[in-house]
Image (cartoon, rainbow over all chains, first blue to last red; front, side, top):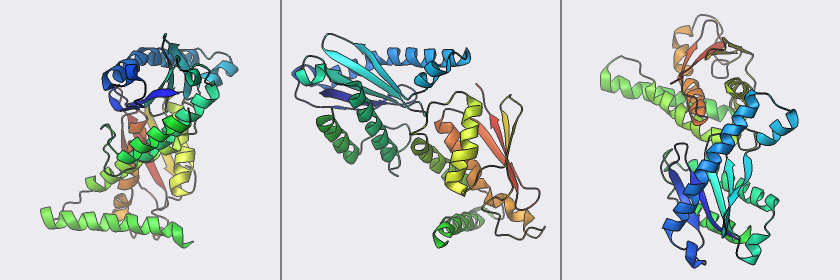
Length: 155
Length: 157
């Protein structure tokens, strides 16, 4: 299951980091921040390679694949797998699953894709909240609740 | 259709209201920066929704095409009639039947008031592009009613 999801802004500042509190090793905010932070370099790398191949106008098939917003598995550690998604507006969505728990180790790629797409939909709704200023952290409890239920149910 | 007109009525009332506000505060000067800002905020927020199902944009021109087709259809129920660019960051979008001007008489009668009715749209384009990480300056010109040209100057740092 997913242990943590994060929304990261255009300037790489965290807009929202949330997760479930069952697993003691990832229970605290600090380790979540660390996990997400390590994913940023991998994300940047993927994005840069996407742009380069587009400039060189490589084969059409690989190009359409790279133009997908979902970037797939960024990398995996002994205990976690980290998936990434970057929107057209350069908002980065990161999902971390635990590879030690039985439900997390054999999670399918399609499931993660669906979860991240739903997270994107939730984010698009959250910034339409008139009390939210662009670039600020997302403090809405509704968003928080919806993300928590997304983590619990979907993945 | 009555439900389409609501947006136009609200838009014209916002302009009347903001003109009224700055008439009472600083004399005669016409200041539409508030209207432009309202447009900016709306464009910024709407872009997140519109690009959700869209593949990643290839380049700036691809983004502009999106503005001309899907973005414009969503707000003005039609596409931009003409897009021109010098490939150096200047884009000119021409709409031959701009929704906010279509109800005016097409002669010279209201030509001097027309700039008021394009300020919101300038902000809307600027906000949408800002969310797609393109900083720009958007100006508009109305030469003959009801057509309208929007000039987008992309700011490269």
